[in-house]
Image (tube, rainbow, N blue to C red; front, top):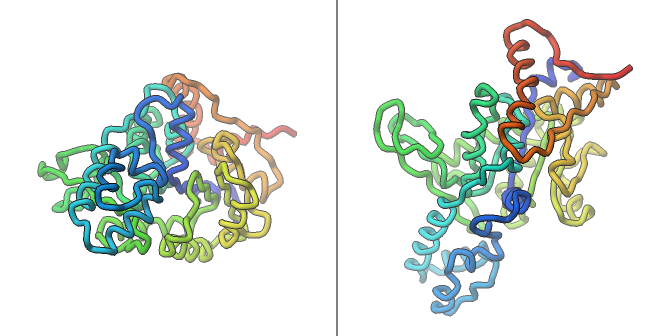
Length: 343
């Protein structure tokens, strides 16, 4: 029976990010810097519209559909290479601003038992992971890159992954960028050893998660393989009947429910238009613990939502009380986190 705080403490909180997460973060910090493209604007944002038109193709077509059409035809090898090159170049230049962003909040709100899996190519998640790592004494979530990422390097010899590092710290050899999985309709998630491992790890985490937050990802019907893998793992989750799904999406609530109906168990879900209203940010670093207390033990915790600071150092200072409590727990000085409940 899944009924103790210690169990909740060990169960992961998994966040799955889609393009909507990066776009939401971009507008949250003031829409400064290069435009973050969606699949509907990607060709234009990459400066490829005129080139695509020269081939007699429609650059305003959804990029995934367009790319799939080009690849399936086998007639546009030069254009395919150009599109890949532009994607890597464009996304590699993206940088977070110095102020607090949604990605900083995600990293700081989770612990090393938790996981963030992203479909996005941009390096924002990695940049946030790097700049918040020391502030929480390295107690940060694991990251999975389901379509690859421009900020990930690997050493084939040592089979190690590095974030934005060109040299392997183990053997000293130069690392290589991981391949990106481009938006073809029939995706092969075993197309590379790296992606195969990422998806294998994701399936394991999904099958164990107590809380699942889906942020800016619609699980498009065209990506049959992704939906199949996610649904299979979630259906086999050992605490499925207790687990909660929260979806952050600006789309109509009924449309969101219809899209995710296969993943929703009974009434165990919530839908938000803003990530700040999620259980995650209302109970940072204690999401699974506080949710277990509220739903299984009828002992609601006092909400301790993450402040909406703009200064990152202020946020680091605020989070330290929780980090110190985690260290005490790890060292056996306390048995449970402070629930902050009122009687």
